[in-house]
Amino acid sequence: MSIFVLIKQTFDTEEKVVLTDGVLSEDGVKWVINPYDEYALEEAMRWKEAHGGTVTVLTAGPERSQEALRTALAMGADDAIHIVPPEGRGTSDDEYIVSSWIASILQEQQPDIIFGGHFSVDQGSAQVAVRVATLLNMPHVSAITGLERTGDSFVQVQRDAEGNAELLDVSLPALFTAQQGLNEPRYPSLPGIMKAKRKPIRVVSAAELSQEAALEPRTERLALEPPPPRQAGRMIAGDAAAQVQELIRLLHEEAKCL
Image 1: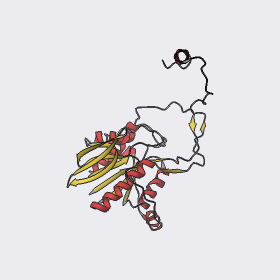
Image 2: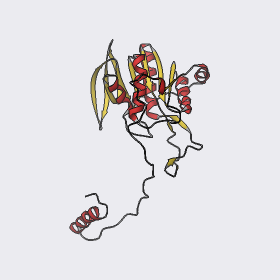
Image 3: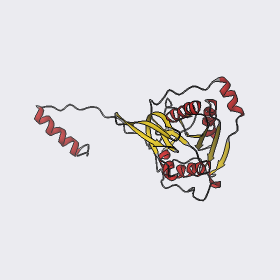
């Protein structure tokens, strides 16, 4: 069975975000596998251990992204593929173009099951994985918190639904995105780290992908800016009726949200 995991390298969530002239500073930053992708990778490893097969991790990004692939290999993945953006572009935060690159690779690989994180902590859009499934014309379920094989080509998944849980029967091949609570990701072992150093990583240039793979993004980031500083609270005097009237006036005239 061919198992693929989509991962992304992101800022460590403990890092302080520094913006300089609208650009995110990467000086001295620690990079990690996106936390939600760790759940996806762990679930892929458990699936392999229970049902056999091989686990391949796939990422798109700059050269430093190979650090995330090495970590995944140390956790037990068998193979790794690195999609390198066109020269001069570095990386792309456009979900359309990244999903197009990934789908181009997966189209030739024909995986039986694909895992990804529910969303990345840097973008938070939860778009790439489901776009990939759409491009592959493959069923998908997002934010899963449970997965059980019920037949040779069928699984039952539990997904988070705004505080409730849904149970769905899905036929394979299919794509699933992992929500927190699906499992507890393992740590790389020392033997795993040593083996990962010797495992090859397949490097693919985005420019070399099939003609169906897009090279131009559909969106453009104009600037980044921190949220405005929180203002001091205000006390509204008067009885309950007067307070309600004053609150409505403030929301309408000052906050501009009514």
